[in-house]
Image 1 (cartoon, rainbow, N blue to C red):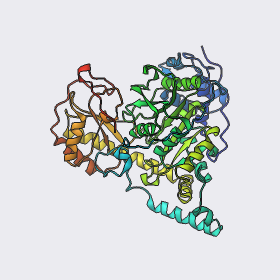
Image 2: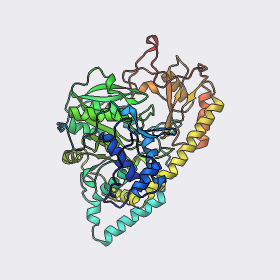
Image 3: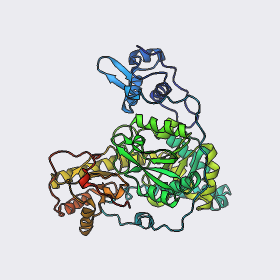
Image 4: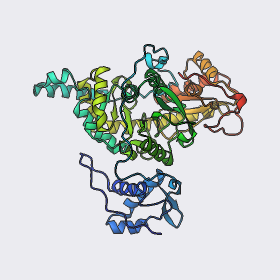
Length: 515
């Protein structure tokens, strides 16, 4: 059955950035699918028909259809056309208006002992191959940054606002940066926000801490992906919350695999690129999470740590954009996009949470540097951030290929390295029966750092593997690191290719404490 003609494209947003025409078509079709106006299995109008009805080019419609297909909303059938994906048959339709109970905020919790916090969060770690989450710093446009900082200072002096620039700042964050971030993530990540719903933090780790302070109380159940980012575990334990491991499979976090969801107050996930396994959460799983949050009044915290470094195509739109920001809180950071010592991140939240979060920010550090925030705002607004991301994507893709080629040449049959779609690190699978933590200790003796996958596991055992970072190292340092790995004398891999989600048989299962 041919669907009714799609409505005219939405009007452009009221910002300095106008949405491309294909994006407007994509958004209207996506909304029709999410709300159930276009049901699973329903045939879309042909690209020629839709283009003629809307008075636009066929290529524009094809571009919109391609994006919908990549994200899992529609399926193409050879010689037949495009259909709404049948995988959405059991997904609950997204309501056109806000529905469900409104989540309530909870008072913060305090612990006296933080001995569980890993060393990687407490002090610097030497930048040696193959440290994870490390961006390249030598190519940062420091001259541009210095020029913008000088310009900001001069303008403040000329306008007699130097005191405001160098004095006390806004705990929510400087308005210029909040506006720049809102414009950037609405276009680049599909986040629904305005400057008024952005709260500036001292990085992603600080953002997690603030959210747990505001939204939970001691003893609350908090869901974490298993395996998970160590900082998320530390923040949850610091808030004296109960950690509930949420297993991860090829589609991402699977709430259906959690024995009990009763009382789960908050769920922290990395849907665009799971850390550290690297898969993207499927559309049905995303919709299932949002439906669960709407039904229970729980919160979902989306940690979007390096999704802008997607090597092919555009980044997958945020989970928050699907939800509209009612139950999904979005965390972003500039530590990996620019440089870690900048210590600038942000939260996108519903309006009702802005004041509580700003108050928590004031308690935990008063405010960030207004000078740095205005320089960063100028860096974004003048287009330097977008240009820097494009340069770094090309650089990281090349370094990833160098790592893959070097391992294929030097460690063929001993280490199986994946080629991720994005990011600064990848998975490298060891021979069955290996002890990845023992391999990591041996690697340190060779002057290199590899991170064992088992260190990130909460409850579910995984096949032995290493997480290798490549973003922050030159091609020569990558090759030298691979040569050092070859000195470890790893056994030969089995012929069969192991799944990164495969669980070892019971006799091999083991549990390591995460860092």
